[in-house]
Every structure is written in C-alpha cells, then in structure tokens.
Length: 116
Image 1 (cartoon, rainbow, N blue to C red):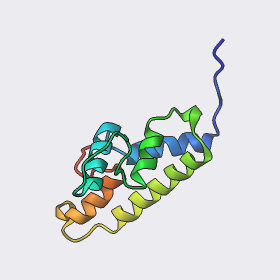
Image 2: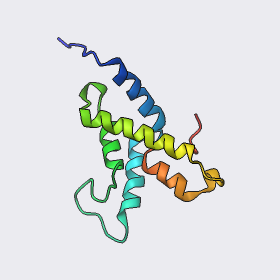
Image 3: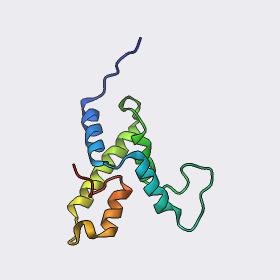
Image 4: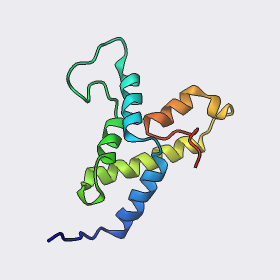
C-alpha cells in the first residue's frame, strides 16, 4: 500500500517558489554548468566534474521529489531563491544585455530570457 507523505506547508510553498525561479530545465542547467566549469581541461568519467557550486546543489534538488528533500536541500532552495532575487533587484543598466549579470543568473538556473 502506498502511503501519502504530508509535507510542511512551508516546504510546499518553498518548492513552488524554487521551481518558479529556477526556470532552466535540469539538463540545460547541467550543460551550462559544464561549459562554465570546463576551462581548458577535458572531461573525465565523473558526471559532476567541473560543475561549479551552487549549481551542483541546485541540480541535486531538481532531481528529487518533494518527499525526498533533506534539510540541506531546503537550505539550498531558500539560498537559491534569495540569490536570484538579489541579482534581479540589482539589474544593471544594460539589463539582459549585460552578459556577466545574465550568466550569474544562469549559474543559478534562472534565465531572464525565458518568457513566463
């Protein structure tokens, strides 16, 4: 018999907020992070090789179900939402044309060019 697990309502809201802010699909985020972390080196067999933080933690959360979240995952979701919001609040004069700003958001799984 499958038992439905109840989650804290705050975690439910956090889950929704996180997935709204992290609008890049997990595979695209992984590809982006691999590109950012590759530098001049080649990739070995380790699938996480070169993935920068906090992107690696964000990807880990994206692969989980709500009922499988750990306290570290919940902290990652809160931190990610806060970092994205801080960057959005500090939007530079050039806006989306500012590559450094946009790339900082992409590192967190948020693409300002994605239409909602």
